[in-house]
Image (cartoon, rainbow, N blue to C red; front, top):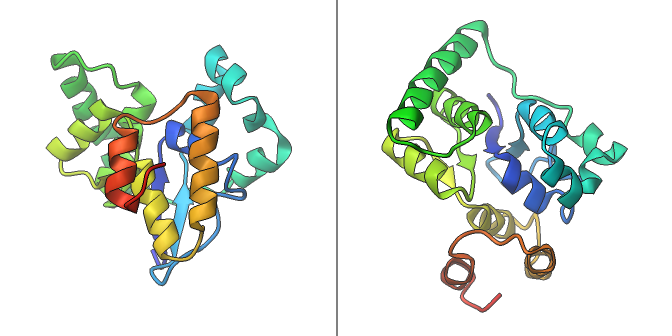
Length: 185
């Protein structure tokens, strides 16, 4: 892959896509980072009334269109992703974790393609660490975007104000923000 793909889980996408549009399919940084979501996001959104209500804008044409580009994978990678997802599902069941099956698939993509998965889900991050899957929090992605001059501090403040407004802040939000940006949100 010539670019450096980064895979967003659905919550990270929902937290960023309204404020940074277009969010996907835009190259940024010297490493040519590109952000992606899995096609599974469409199914998850369509079947979850709470998400439909909270993130009503997701079905607007410009956001749907922005989600059309997909990670390209080979047949062999697809098979390995499916096997890895099965292993992660077994781990989920054995440990009584509440990670969604879609999030398990997201982690499997990250593992097999060796790309970072952006998630704020505590259990997903723990499983990612346990299985040596690259992962970042949404705030860490925002710091990378800032360091690459893709977004400004003003945009970051706008995003976190939006999170406050919709009452959808990641775990450890305030302490992580202070640690990463050296200021209060």
